[in-house]
Length: 104
Image 1 (spheres, helix red, strand yellow):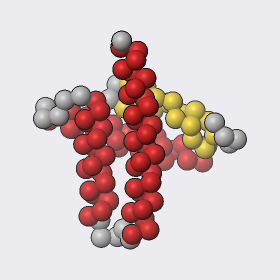
Image 2 (cartoon, rainbow, N blue to C red):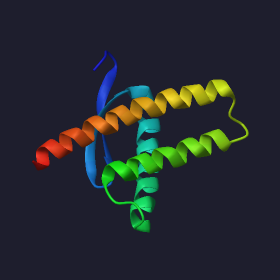
Image 3 (cartoon, helix red, strand yellow):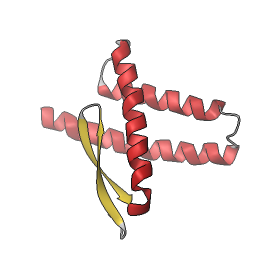
């Protein structure tokens, strides 16, 4: 973790993750985690998508679609969101890989 960052516990689909986050962004991270958890829970409860990795991908696609469709988002913001989504996707993939190793 970099200077000024703390590990923040977030829960997504009954799984706890530690995420490095600057103190001033902690509330935004917790809010984002709750929002993502709700989206993923909705997808899981629909019964149409099975598997945590597929649920995560579907949630990411839905959120990306919402951002792109938003009239108030310009191309610079879309690029920033895209970079942010890629970073979050890498963190999710790393956490899922660790989770799969723990199951084996």
